[in-house]
Length: 210
Image 1 (spheres, rainbow, N blue to C red):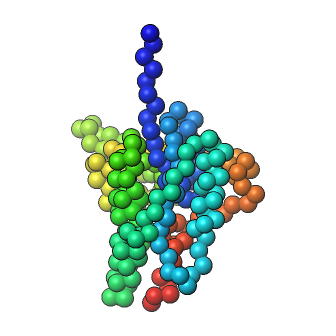
Image 2: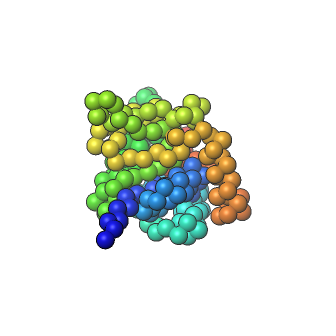
Image 3: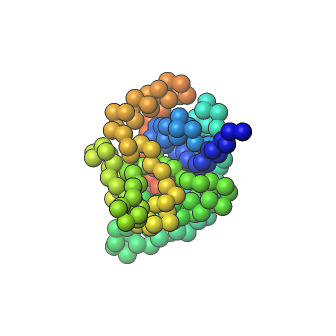
């Protein structure tokens, strides 16, 4: 009797754009059990948002790849932990980085915790970074092979338990590889697709609150 090694389960945060979609493709090609997850953030009522379009694109990618799709509503957490904090700091004359807030509190905070509680072994995103291990066995956040696209600056807050559960598939490839994969996805799944503005920037514009 042959023992079949169970596939590791990965929840991929899908924004509806190219990099996260490519991440899902790469993980499926590596025989991971992939689930796509779209994170709902918060936006004020008076601003136009592309979130519904992005959500549909994320659903379309999952349908084409034949993987499950889930939507995680973190709008209340997003408003309290990202938007309100940013606005308060901005009004006080400070300049917090909203992407770092979002990564710390939402993507690698609430989303990661939820994913692990719901059966995921790993969480993956389309960030240009990678995770390795030092000689001492500690996890390390490493720069992307594409230095121009490297996003480790926005991930500096990640700690050992988080790094142990994270995958950054596109961080191991140069942008040209991701672009080619993205064009293949775009041709298969979209008529025309722009890169998303990011979870913070697609939810609201801070100039409205200044």
